[in-house]
Length: 158
Image 1 (tube, helix red, strand yellow):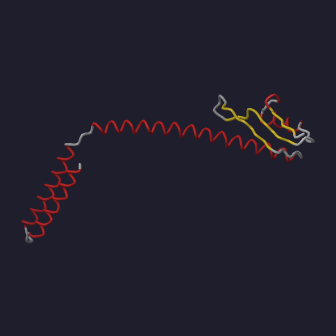
Image 2 (tube, one colour):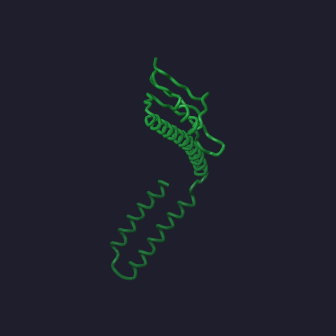
Image 3 (cartoon, one colour):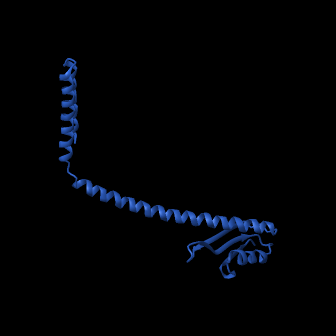
């Protein structure tokens, strides 16, 4: 390919010099057409001599890398999607707790992938102060998010 580019440059300079020295008229027009044909012949000759075997190997490597990146991106997307949904559930419970007069220190909701193809709340871990009555919050977790009491973890400050 380097040789083709070098040949094109040399021929272009030579043909340009010849055309600039040629007087106006029919001969100059014929030389311009001849110059174009010569340059096209050099390009076609170079394309015919290309070794495309390495191209197919590189193309296969490219497709393999593309597949790996797509799989990695899908996994990252799923993880981020789950984290965002867990955070939204935690924010929802925090708003409900504050409306009920409870101030949790930390809320963590873990989600799992359902058969329907959705992230649903699976378990909770809530850190509250010792004097808080958590029964109302337990009912909110059970009734609104479907987290049964056995998957609700409560951490009380003593």
